[in-house]
Image (cartoon, rainbow, N blue to C red):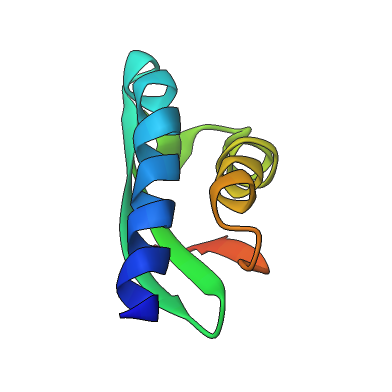
Length: 78
């Protein structure tokens, strides 16, 4: 049950940031949450964007931590 709540919080955070990514021709998808580390996959223009790591840390990770402070890190997978 606790994991379901955490997943909902992370999805809520992704829903908050997704419109900004979509406006730049990209998107993001939740892959997994394991030991308070969120794995996401960047899609579309986000994959080749030169500032995608900055977006991941300053945008995505910050927004997820706002909704789910227990998350320690957000990593992107290929």
